[in-house]
Length: 462
Image 1: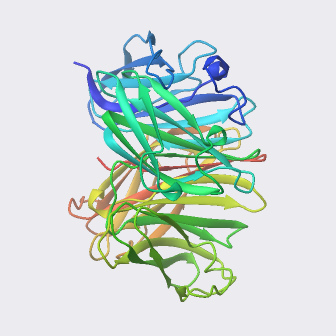
Image 2: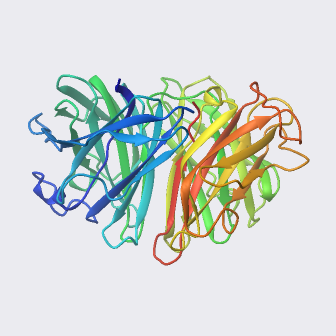
């Protein structure tokens, strides 16, 4: 039995972007996509992949393009589809149905494979989706997003750009299973705003994927279906091998709130804090300035110019508002950009799945950050599909609130392409699982060459 609920993915694909009404020249690249699907069950299963042509904003279009034959997937195994099955010229959306629970990550790139991004699929859509960061002519960055209707009838989607005033700014209609693209470059409603956030309200469940583009970067993320009071960010880079981080905090609530982010050093740096006021329905950028300079009116304890690699979490939210937090990483000057979504710690579990793992695959490898969001010390061991090698947190384990970077470069096997599962254990013998501990992960995919060879996605907690 195939279950459609397993994962819905808005996939932006190849050349046919030119066939969609009104989008010629609206984006900086011609795209191609690949999808990695991981079985979260120990039992083998089967997948069906259905492709839907893109629609337009009046609800027309969006017809089914093709359905694959059943695809076998091993227990805890992974299937890599790069490029995707659809014929050349396809642009639209994808629904993956599975007989077992699965997770999926999409890698998206230009046709020359020099500019790349990654984002997570969703198990279901939501009538409300929040986008913490969009761009229009912002230091070379523009953004666009794809709205996929995961419902059974047409969806009317109201778009409220919070920084441009109160009220609905535009409305689009999306056919069932189809997707419609919205380009900030073509919109005239933003005035002089260069960065802003958006809230989408739909009559049917939707999934939204955002592409932040410059001429040398793609930073991709999946829209939020809800916020968190005290979100967690497992990876923070600042002044680290020329990397900087921007943490975009979007207040979804009706009241202003004072937000404190506590930075916890991992391999480098010193613990510190930053406090800013985030008005209602507004996004404020944290992290970037406080490790570089003293900023008047900002309460912070971070060391200017210090090399920092660690994690962060919101530790104060004065009026208890829901927050959607996006983390952008960028290597200066303007190379190697990626984005990931902060986590609600309530979603943490004792195991995390990562569908895309590399070791020296055409110059690509992965490194992931694991953070302990439980109480007390935990011991984390990670296994990899198809190889006997494991990685763990050593004899000392991982302290409460601490994170560690685990790299696969030179560890698994040459040209390894696969997946990973990390689980918590009771002690440093790594023999007995601890089902009560809580961990989260963020995965960086890194390659050689230029200009953009960094992709980031969130580990999946079942």
